[in-house]
Length: 258
Image 1: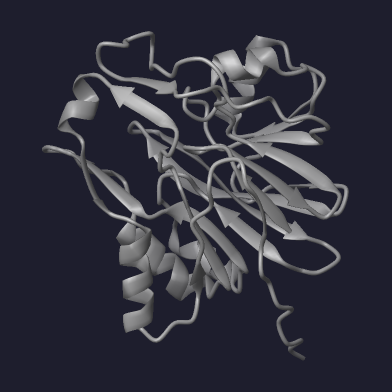
Image 2: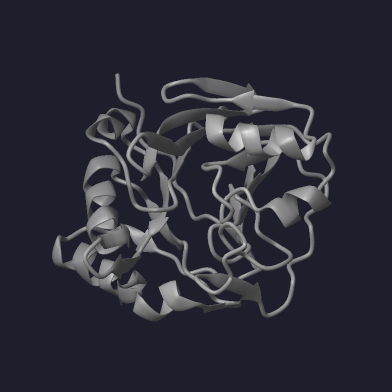
């Protein structure tokens, strides 16, 4: 199992025989509703569009997960798997092979099975997706949710070998955390007993500006998560990838229980 971090929420996973492009924002600026005065993200340099993608996996329909300019640049025949909100976005952009996953639903692509689980609340009524991806041949499981939100039913999926979750906490005055880092990572470590954890949502090669950015407060991070796990006597590896580096995950088969 290999992961390549493409900065922010964007990933390329190689699981079994599948190359999965996750929440891609690779080119162009990021704004919400074209309100660049409120929030704008720009890459220091664009990421190349990956080739030979088997499918695109989208957690949300918001621009930082279903980035219109990036998706517009991709081949519209590439299959897409996503939340109902994300599916609406890609259909409007012209993608022709779209699989919608509601919470609890699964789809199998080659040697990988993708199951949707409850993810981030977006507004008062919309709950987007997280995913459990299982490699059929090995039984290795990967969990991904980009904002640090999950529900107690996720415990039923344990053990999960790889967890990708925010480790940086981002908070707004009067609102509180919008990205749940340290607390979320600690819960997932306890619930899923992973072998490896990787941070997502952080920015290594991206510059942000705007009113919203000026009032965001960032705390915690991967080192804080390491300290928390060490204090609890857990031997989970916390890996911090570099943007663009293809990382083979150091996973050991778990004992078979009968």
